[in-house]
Length: 168
Image (tube, helix red, strand yellow):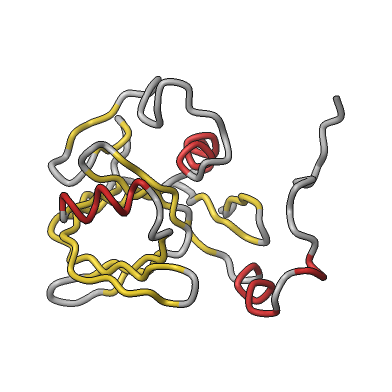
């Protein structure tokens, strides 16, 4: 077995659409969205808009188990991930096996919005406000009802199909 430094199944750059290549050149925070069920999804297309109330926007897969559960619950948690959460991010993105289910093997705290990994001190509790198809994704808008903003660890970043971390 050979270990590759690149994903051998990734679509080569020359075969990607120009829009997909542009998106890949924009660094994005890696977050975990969870809801009752429990269900969860790794989301790197996340934007937080300050205001009264604040909002969170994200692009998700409308065929995901997460979306089905969110439509039922109407509430979700958004957790910022750090470099130590790479395997967690891969598991919830469907890139890594999850024997026993996505939430097996880790400690979780029930927040009333969705489970949050035990020890996560930066997350937001949101109420589903709206959704609509946008391109090949579903744009989900949530009203932020609760924020826990702990110490600011270095974030996990997604850039050009791989995880990176900010130094500093």
